[in-house]
Image (cartoon, rainbow, N blue to C red; front, side, top):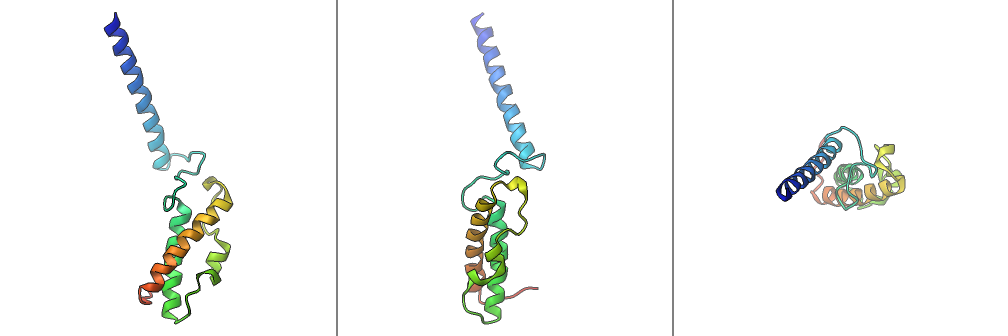
Length: 119
């Protein structure tokens, strides 16, 4: 009897774990978004950071190519910081904070790349 109870407990525990993982995979691959917008709140994990990184890299390369001084805060992308924001990403202030962090990092990378500008 005890072995049956133990087996039943193990089967239920494994089933619950598989269900939780399937729900996470569904969120991860476009089947919906969890309450936090589908990303962790750490540096580099958010869509805002990634979008900001690419925008900053492009703007940094462009400014170096045009021989502008290093001035990431003067670009309109940095000032507005809400490009591609969607409501399911969560708090807009947090999105802007993450976007700007990514933008500054990308701008530094682009500006220091020697001004190689791609169109």
